Image (cartoon, rainbow, N blue to C red):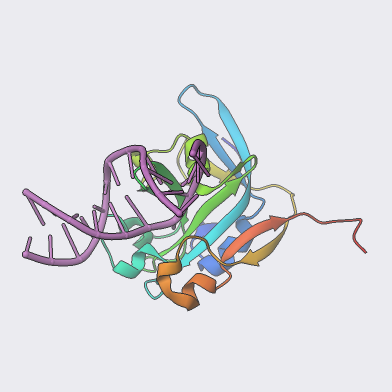
Length: 178
DNA sequence: GTAAGGATTGGC
DNA sequence: CCAATCCTTACT
Protein backbone atom coordinates (compact mmCIF):
# COMPACT_ATOMS: atom_id res chain seq x y z
CA UNK A 1 0.00 0.00 0.00
CA UNK A 2 1.01 3.61 -0.13
CA UNK A 3 1.76 6.58 2.08
CA UNK A 4 -0.12 8.65 -0.45
CA UNK A 5 -3.49 7.03 0.12
CA UNK A 6 -6.31 9.56 0.34
CA UNK A 7 -7.58 9.78 3.97
CA UNK A 8 -11.13 9.69 5.19
CA UNK A 9 -11.11 13.48 5.60
CA UNK A 10 -10.90 13.77 1.81
CA UNK A 11 -14.22 11.98 1.36
CA UNK A 12 -16.40 13.30 4.17
CA UNK A 13 -16.68 16.76 2.61
CA UNK A 14 -19.54 17.81 0.30
CA UNK A 15 -19.46 16.04 -3.06
CA UNK A 16 -19.25 19.40 -4.86
CA UNK A 17 -15.92 19.97 -3.11
CA UNK A 18 -14.59 16.44 -3.48
CA UNK A 19 -15.44 15.84 -7.14
CA UNK A 20 -13.18 18.48 -8.76
CA UNK A 21 -10.24 17.20 -6.70
CA UNK A 22 -10.86 13.63 -7.77
CA UNK A 23 -9.98 14.33 -11.40
CA UNK A 24 -6.35 13.28 -11.92
CA UNK A 25 -6.16 11.24 -8.71
CA UNK A 26 -4.86 7.66 -8.90
CA UNK A 27 -7.21 4.70 -8.60
CA UNK A 28 -5.28 1.62 -7.46
CA UNK A 29 -6.55 -1.95 -7.76
CA UNK A 30 -4.92 -5.13 -6.48
CA UNK A 31 -6.33 -8.06 -8.45
CA UNK A 32 -6.82 -11.61 -7.19
CA UNK A 33 -3.46 -12.69 -8.61
CA UNK A 34 -1.74 -10.03 -6.50
CA UNK A 35 -0.93 -7.77 -9.44
CA UNK A 36 -1.48 -4.07 -8.73
CA UNK A 37 -2.58 -1.67 -11.48
CA UNK A 38 -3.00 2.07 -11.17
CA UNK A 39 -5.14 4.34 -13.30
CA UNK A 40 -5.50 8.10 -13.50
CA UNK A 41 -9.14 9.20 -13.06
CA UNK A 42 -10.36 11.06 -16.15
CA UNK A 43 -14.12 11.54 -15.98
CA UNK A 44 -16.71 11.49 -13.20
CA UNK A 45 -20.30 12.46 -12.44
CA UNK A 46 -21.75 14.02 -9.30
CA UNK A 47 -24.91 12.65 -7.64
CA UNK A 48 -26.07 14.73 -4.71
CA UNK A 49 -28.88 14.17 -2.25
CA UNK A 50 -32.49 12.99 -2.36
CA UNK A 51 -33.54 16.19 -4.15
CA UNK A 52 -31.31 15.27 -7.12
CA UNK A 53 -33.80 13.37 -9.30
CA UNK A 54 -30.92 11.75 -11.20
CA UNK A 55 -29.53 10.27 -7.99
CA UNK A 56 -30.64 6.80 -6.92
CA UNK A 57 -31.18 8.24 -3.42
CA UNK A 58 -34.07 10.32 -4.82
CA UNK A 59 -36.11 7.13 -4.36
CA UNK A 60 -35.21 7.13 -0.69
CA UNK A 61 -33.29 4.77 1.53
CA UNK A 62 -33.41 1.20 0.18
CA UNK A 63 -31.16 -1.84 0.28
CA UNK A 64 -29.50 -0.54 -2.83
CA UNK A 65 -28.99 3.09 -1.79
CA UNK A 66 -28.19 2.37 1.88
CA UNK A 67 -24.43 2.88 1.56
CA UNK A 68 -24.89 6.35 0.07
CA UNK A 69 -26.31 7.39 3.45
CA UNK A 70 -23.12 6.32 5.17
CA UNK A 71 -20.16 8.55 5.90
CA UNK A 72 -17.92 9.23 2.87
CA UNK A 73 -15.06 6.90 1.95
CA UNK A 74 -16.99 3.78 0.93
CA UNK A 75 -17.76 2.21 -2.42
CA UNK A 76 -21.22 2.09 -3.96
CA UNK A 77 -21.47 -0.41 -6.82
CA UNK A 78 -24.61 -1.50 -8.62
CA UNK A 79 -25.45 -3.61 -11.64
CA UNK A 80 -26.93 -1.78 -14.61
CA UNK A 81 -28.72 -3.38 -17.57
CA UNK A 82 -27.95 -6.75 -16.03
CA UNK A 83 -24.40 -6.51 -17.31
CA UNK A 84 -22.22 -3.74 -15.96
CA UNK A 85 -21.02 -2.99 -12.45
CA UNK A 86 -20.73 0.80 -12.09
CA UNK A 87 -18.24 2.22 -9.60
CA UNK A 88 -19.11 5.10 -7.26
CA UNK A 89 -17.37 6.65 -4.28
CA UNK A 90 -19.58 7.77 -1.40
CA UNK A 91 -18.85 11.27 -0.08
CA UNK A 92 -20.18 13.65 2.55
CA UNK A 93 -21.29 13.20 6.18
CA UNK A 94 -23.57 10.48 7.50
CA UNK A 95 -27.21 10.58 6.32
CA UNK A 96 -26.38 12.92 3.42
CA UNK A 97 -26.58 10.63 0.36
CA UNK A 98 -23.95 11.63 -2.18
CA UNK A 99 -21.76 9.70 -4.60
CA UNK A 100 -19.34 10.18 -7.45
CA UNK A 101 -19.70 7.91 -10.48
CA UNK A 102 -16.42 6.97 -12.15
CA UNK A 103 -17.12 7.33 -15.88
CA UNK A 104 -13.58 7.14 -17.19
CA UNK A 105 -10.08 6.12 -16.16
CA UNK A 106 -6.85 6.02 -18.18
CA UNK A 107 -7.47 4.01 -21.39
CA UNK A 108 -11.01 3.02 -20.35
CA UNK A 109 -13.83 5.43 -21.17
CA UNK A 110 -17.37 4.61 -20.11
CA UNK A 111 -18.53 3.52 -16.65
CA UNK A 112 -19.32 -0.02 -17.80
CA UNK A 113 -15.83 -0.46 -19.20
CA UNK A 114 -14.32 0.87 -15.97
CA UNK A 115 -16.15 -1.77 -13.94
CA UNK A 116 -15.18 -4.50 -16.37
CA UNK A 117 -11.49 -3.54 -16.36
CA UNK A 118 -11.44 -3.40 -12.56
CA UNK A 119 -13.26 -6.75 -12.32
CA UNK A 120 -15.87 -5.38 -9.95
CA UNK A 121 -18.79 -7.33 -8.54
CA UNK A 122 -21.34 -7.14 -5.74
CA UNK A 123 -18.70 -7.93 -3.11
CA UNK A 124 -17.33 -4.39 -3.51
CA UNK A 125 -20.56 -2.86 -2.21
CA UNK A 126 -19.71 -0.94 0.99
CA UNK A 127 -15.95 -1.59 0.71
CA UNK A 128 -13.84 1.05 2.48
CA UNK A 129 -11.47 3.04 0.30
CA UNK A 130 -9.56 3.89 3.46
CA UNK A 131 -8.77 0.33 4.59
CA UNK A 132 -9.29 -1.98 1.60
CA UNK A 133 -6.26 -3.86 0.30
CA UNK A 134 -7.80 -4.43 -3.13
CA UNK A 135 -9.01 -0.96 -4.14
CA UNK A 136 -7.99 2.48 -2.97
CA UNK A 137 -7.08 6.02 -4.07
CA UNK A 138 -3.73 7.78 -4.07
CA UNK A 139 -2.61 11.33 -4.70
CA UNK A 140 0.56 12.80 -6.15
CA UNK A 141 1.74 16.09 -7.64
CA UNK A 142 -0.23 15.66 -10.85
CA UNK A 143 -2.21 18.77 -11.82
CA UNK A 144 -5.28 18.54 -14.04
CA UNK A 145 -7.76 20.83 -15.69
CA UNK A 146 -11.33 19.80 -16.32
CA UNK A 147 -14.47 20.90 -18.11
CA UNK A 148 -18.04 20.75 -16.76
CA UNK A 149 -20.65 18.95 -18.89
CA UNK A 150 -24.22 17.65 -18.44
CA UNK A 151 -24.60 14.17 -16.98
CA UNK A 152 -25.37 11.29 -19.33
CA UNK A 153 -28.34 8.93 -19.48
CA UNK A 154 -30.66 10.59 -16.98
CA UNK A 155 -33.19 12.37 -19.20
CA UNK A 156 -35.92 10.90 -16.99
CA UNK A 157 -34.73 13.19 -14.17
CA UNK A 158 -36.25 16.25 -15.84
CA UNK A 159 -34.68 19.26 -17.51
CA UNK A 160 -33.00 20.78 -14.49
CA UNK A 161 -31.26 17.65 -13.24
CA UNK A 162 -30.36 16.30 -16.68
CA UNK A 163 -28.77 19.53 -17.86
CA UNK A 164 -26.93 20.64 -14.73
CA UNK A 165 -23.20 20.38 -15.50
CA UNK A 166 -22.23 17.75 -12.99
CA UNK A 167 -20.04 15.67 -15.31
CA UNK A 168 -16.39 16.60 -14.91
CA UNK A 169 -13.98 15.55 -17.63
CA UNK A 170 -10.23 16.08 -17.73
CA UNK A 171 -9.17 18.67 -20.25
CA UNK A 172 -5.70 18.71 -21.74
CA UNK A 173 -3.83 21.99 -21.57
CA UNK A 174 -3.16 22.97 -25.19
CA UNK A 175 0.11 24.89 -25.27
CA UNK A 176 -0.23 25.57 -28.99
CA UNK A 177 -3.56 27.36 -28.90
CA UNK A 178 -3.51 31.08 -29.52
C1' DG B 1 -45.72 -13.39 -7.13
C1' DT B 2 -45.28 -10.55 -11.18
C1' DA B 3 -43.75 -6.93 -14.20
C1' DA B 4 -41.24 -2.87 -15.70
C1' DG B 5 -37.18 -0.45 -16.36
C1' DG B 6 -32.34 1.02 -15.90
C1' DA B 7 -26.10 6.55 -14.08
C1' DT B 8 -24.44 1.10 -20.77
C1' DT B 9 -22.36 -0.85 -24.57
C1' DG B 10 -21.62 -2.65 -29.07
C1' DG B 11 -23.39 -4.07 -33.30
C1' DC B 12 -26.50 -3.38 -37.31
C1' DC C 1 -31.68 2.31 -34.21
C1' DC C 2 -31.92 -1.63 -30.88
C1' DA C 3 -30.89 -6.00 -28.33
C1' DA C 4 -28.33 -8.04 -24.45
C1' DT C 5 -29.26 -9.49 -19.67
C1' DC C 6 -30.79 -9.63 -14.72
C1' DC C 7 -31.27 -7.11 -10.36
C1' DT C 8 -34.11 -3.77 -7.89
C1' DT C 9 -38.24 -1.72 -7.16
C1' DA C 10 -43.14 -1.11 -7.19
C1' DC C 11 -46.85 -2.86 -7.66
C1' DT C 12 -50.95 -6.93 -6.85
